[in-house]
Image 1 (cartoon, rainbow, N blue to C red):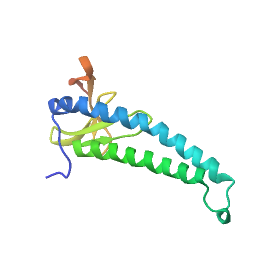
Image 2 (tube, rainbow, N blue to C red):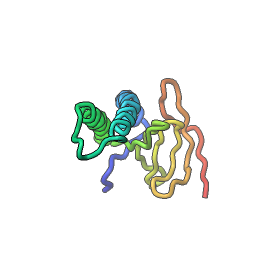
Image 3 (tube, helix red, strand yellow):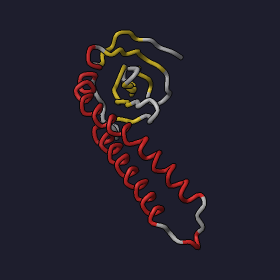
Length: 142
């Protein structure tokens, strides 16, 4: 038995509204975290350990920690749903599924099913109305 949730296309479709909200929040929080890190780096860039921590430095560090905690919470929410978050740049989310007795991913945007173990493309999925996933064409690459 796998240690991860396997989705049907219909199950993945039903989770999309929840996943979309979580990913939206996650992608909103990520630039805030990056800005907080940049501010912290600027403040600490000229600091010396023997000067101690200033209020600004403590506030900047706390901001970084707070944003990181929220990001971690969103990632844990996606994991509890059974999704795999693939990165902040594209905001990709994968769902595991079985296709011809192989574990593959249903990739949300641009809707590609690919092998979970080898990264080979095994089928192309296209979004229907409202981001609904459905199989339109199967393609195999070696």
